Length: 227
Image (tube, rainbow, N blue to C red; front, side, top):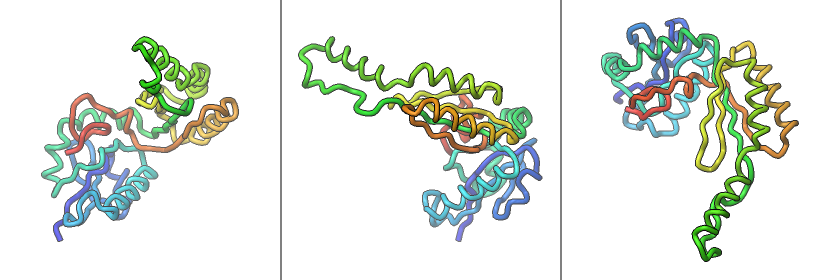
């Protein structure tokens, strides 16, 4: 059996990860890289490997915040990990210092139901099709009042709120929340469900730093391509 290691995340201190059984640690300058050993003959795509990495990721997050490395990056040793991580190390270290004690929470919200595009066969002109396309997209868009309520509710708990708009017109909000404020965050989400029963959304977490650790460069950083 040839052992390889699936990279999991970057940690600020050794003690943030060395108590989790089954995790291998590599030193990369001022940060520590966690990794999960797996049987190379089974590969990263095997259910066993995916489940094992997910379990270890959750246990690591219970210890302390870390920067998530997108699933799919693997190495054979610490020597191989270092050049892959080097372009991101300084950025990871800065994020881990600044956001220590915080976790990401996400809210994916969807508005109306049904198709986003009208049937072209029902129109005799392009202008008519475009008008109906705009109408459908407007009906599916999230209510402005809901977006404002999310910003207003969570602003006192987080220093920054980010959002990503999807092609299906759903919007995913990301929040950085102090660990000791997580119950407050869930209570805010429950209140929003009561105030906006027509807007389905999923509030989930905690997660490691992902959306708040995105880099413009391609590589193994959270949110970018794998190795």
